[in-house]
Each structure stands twice: as C-alpha cells, then as structure tokens.
Length: 169
Image 1 (spheres, rainbow, N blue to C red):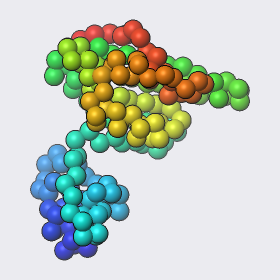
Image 2: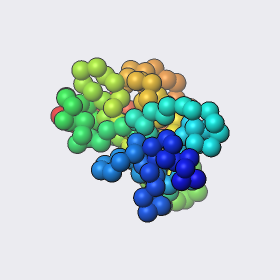
Image 3: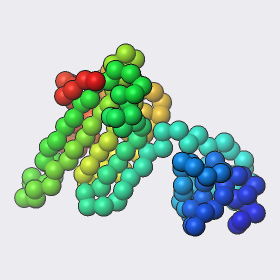
C-alpha cells in the first residue's frame, strides 16, 4: 500500500494520509476513508484527479454535525456576507415527545448571492450535508435554494425556506 500511496503523492503520517502530499495544513485522511476517486486512482488503476475543494464533512456525535464550505468567520474575510439561521424542534421529535433541536446556517455572499457555506447540527446532519454539498460545489445561489420546493414535513425544508438574514457582515 505504501508504494501505491507514494505513486499518488499520498504520504501516510501516523495513520493519516495527505492527498496533496507534504506537511502543513493539508487535508488529512486515513487511507481507508479516501474518497472514491482517490480509491480508484490508488487501487483501481483508473487515474482521476480529485478536487479537494469544498469537501462536505460530518462528525457523527449526538447530535451530528455537518459542514461544507466556509465558516462565517472565513467568509467575512472574502467579502460582504449574509447569514441565515434556523433553530427548531423537528416534527418527528415533537411527535415522539423528544426535546432534540436542529440548527442550520447558510452563509451567502452578499454580492454574488452564492452560498459559501452550510453548517448543520442535528439528527442526520451527515446525510443532509452530503446532498447540500453537491449544490454548494455546483455554485448554487441563495435564490437557487429559495426556488426549490420544500418537502414537508422534513428538516431539510428549512434550508429552502430561510428568507431573512439574521445578520450581515
């Protein structure tokens, strides 16, 4: 495996692999969790260039966390932003008598309207962020989100029904 990883400039370091090679602040991924295009390149003999920009990620804790794109702080450094937030008790939790809540945040460039980041806390955040990551990767705008018909009753409908920014920067 070391030979395969070296061929693609993936350097294992204490159980981590750096897809871009070298040290520093590169993305660290355990080889068993390499993205599928990387696996195809390393083990399948089908070389592909993997784009490591805008990788959706999740932390499978209770509650789950999901994130893709820029944080609010990093987005402020890029230019003017609008921040949309929702915090609510999902209908499935209410029906079951549970108190769990969900938090969602969209970070939008005020000039281009492009969604720069999405951050989720709640059940199934890992599943949701993978799907939202596709839209963010494709350059979706806030208006693209708004033009999407919400599936009711779901947690994800909040992502397409947030109409007023809670703050700007």
